[in-house]
Length: 165
Image (tube, rainbow, N blue to C red; front, side, top):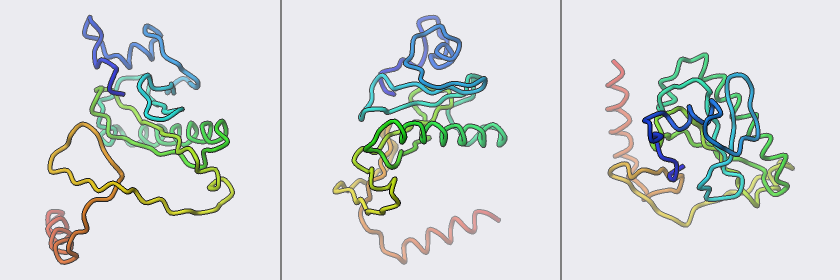
C-alpha cells in the first residue's frame, strides 16, 4: 500500500475517506462495519486490503478484542472470496504490519499457483531468499534468515520468559 498518501491534502485519513465514500477505491466487498478493496500498488493480482469503516490506529493488535476478532473473521471471509475467484489460488497470505497508513488494515495476498492446496495437497515452499533485519525497513518478509545457534535461541527464550514476571 506504499502509493497511498497517508493523509489527504486537508489532513484527513485516506482510508477513512475511502470508507466514507469520499475517495475512489476498487471495493469488492463490504458490510456495515468493514470493507475490502483492491490495492492500487499490488505486487500480485488480487492483492487486497481489508479495513474497518471506523478509524482505529494501524497497530491492529491494540484494537479492542471484540473488534479484532470480527476483523480477522472478515479477513478470513475475504480470503475465501479470493480463493474462490482465482482458480490457481489455494491459499491467501495475511499481513497485519500496517505502518504505511495509520488506519487499521489487513493485507491479503493471493498465492497464485497454489491450486493444489484446494484439494488438500500439501507442498512445502521455501524461499530462496535469506533476509535478516536489524531494524524495520518499512516492509516485512516471510523468507527465512540465517540459522541461529540453538543455544542462543534458548538464552533469548529464557530472557523473554523472565520478562513475563
